[in-house]
Length: 198
Image (cartoon, helix red, strand yellow):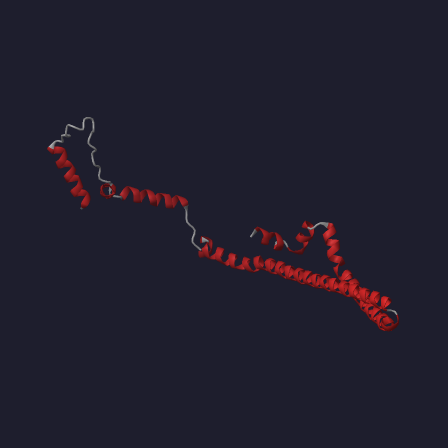
């Protein structure tokens, strides 16, 4: 997400501020260079035609000159392939720049479209929009009255339910002697467990 944010946030002006001045100059020169490459390609095409003519003329009389013309023709064809690749890269760069600009515009539009919905939800959820205002002092007084009217026995019943049974651990001072418990302690524990189970 951070990479996406860096590429698309802030629009064209922010991207221009972040970009190096030399990059901006190069981006502005892309159409000029594309035009120059097209002219160079046309020039090389005419050169290829000329080399073919030279090769045809000298194919019977002077084979050496004809072979050199064909080598130059192959070299020109190779340059044309490079130019085609460069033109294709420039066109894709233009397309990518256009796509990024469209994405920047969409990202700019999203907060503008989202703001009215936030305003609506804020107005619906505020108490001022309902026409009802609450006084803090009145609310505190009502809370105090509720606390005074509460029956304390309600809380005691809840505490007994929340208790976890406690089991006494036998002391292991001498493993040979069994631990002795009083019958009263056992009865108390059983009574506690019955209350806890109910």
